[in-house]
Length: 255
Image (cartoon, rainbow, N blue to C red):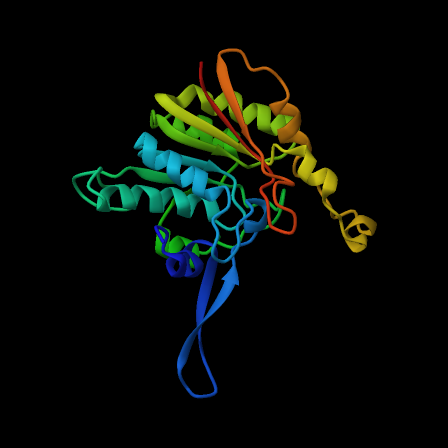
């Protein structure tokens, strides 16, 4: 296969810890990356992460920014795509995760519990200790004004997956689209309302008022016409019954 399924399983779709078995041998215990299911990903399948990986490869995107991530699934794909561009001879120079000639992966998350908890707040977490993102632990609005604009950063690939209210999605798009490079691309996650319409919420979450809609805001924004932008919806909900599907990915680029 073109894809290294073992590497995907042990580094991209799962975290792992080493445990000692009864035979005193060291084994890897796999822990699924939180929220990977919203991308239609499984142990061996990248889901819509494969689309993002391919787009970064094709566009030769160096500066990648992810707004919001529960388990670091998309940011680790961003970094892997950039590393692979170097290993395949497309990027040249120094191969350093964030300070060399292959660009940087920026991750912005307030870690405030809105939309779910993150599992990489500690620097020695699996994700941060292996993929070394430039982690900005703040709101997307504050990061925009007090980091990205102050450092005059131009973004080649932007993924929006932070606050899921309509207002949050609209704000993130309107702010960060100002920083997009000439050939840059934006993706918004959770834009397929059909997925959530078919999704069964467990009774305990309903009774405890712990369920938060994940497609209402993104899908509402996505239904609007944004002047000056071309849009492409990538939805696969219902395409293959009995198999995982994505909660929706929508691409935007300058018209």
